[in-house]
Length: 437
Image (tube, rainbow, N blue to C red; front, side, top):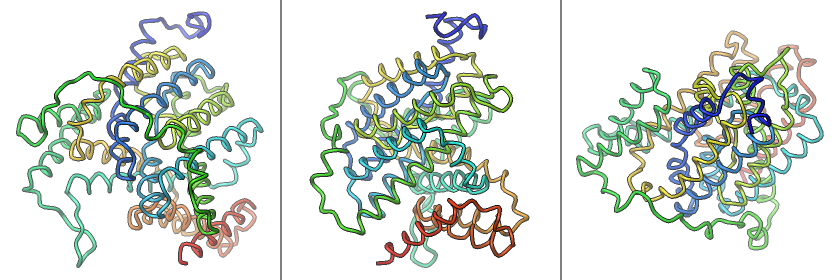
């Protein structure tokens, strides 16, 4: 095993890799409880999603560790699960079963473009500023959901939204959780989000807002409600032109967000681990194939897009340098499936802090946008602000991609716009036309 992962070359050991894998697991374990709550809003069975989340994370991370040999873990992505639930299912009215098919297809497409080696062409076609804006916009969208779930932000007829009742017990619990999580994160605690959820749950039990779980360890929830429906749903839906166009937009959005989120995460973590040489990422093809395979597997199991997690950087910082760290993380996700009874104590108030903090971390990419150039600032700003305000990640991406060719052409920078961007202009123009019908 040590020879397969080249322990000697990387100056590491079983103990060091195990610590790295454990640290990564603790840093991202919150997804086991947050993902089922988000997808439950789309009408999915919470227990089945819990199992699908754990299995998708375990299998995806195992593939990444064994094939690409990177200390990078995978799980259903934050932002992509929100897009799945709130934009695709609740916003567009697409059944969650069919939305899972969209995730499955995007994974297959991802596999194909990875095998064909056209990754660089796609990355170069879309300007960096729009990638940064999309990431930041998704962050704001996730944070908005967290604030809403906490009761800190509530609907209000006169101003659309307003501050919630801060004397409400559940809102106070959510605020407590946010403060605790922020303190843990600022103090540099690895797994701060996960520990924040634990502390908030305990506090909720103590004050009587959350019921004590009847047990901690239990049987693994059945996958039956979600397993395979990504395929079987195709034969149960009444196809229309509008539905097909909407599904195409969904697939493209899943593909776009996952593609660049994965590329950015892989590069960032690999660079931290010292793998990047001459601005090139070794085994990039295998890493991308691992990620895309995990997405398709996750969709068949019953969860939204599975992608690489930036929290893997915590494991690298703790000593993880090879794929064996990922093998350890994968094993821990399998063990975690037996702790499903804890879902009962992880309420929206408990998970709201995790959503807000993830939003903060994703919003960091705003600093990489050149706001002094209006031809860049306008489409970037519209991308960012439209996501939370229209409650749709797709709308934000569509607006940004519509305005970018316009502002660049009017500025006289037509030659800098890749032909693919003009093609996407018409794709998203058609999206808005069909959306208005």
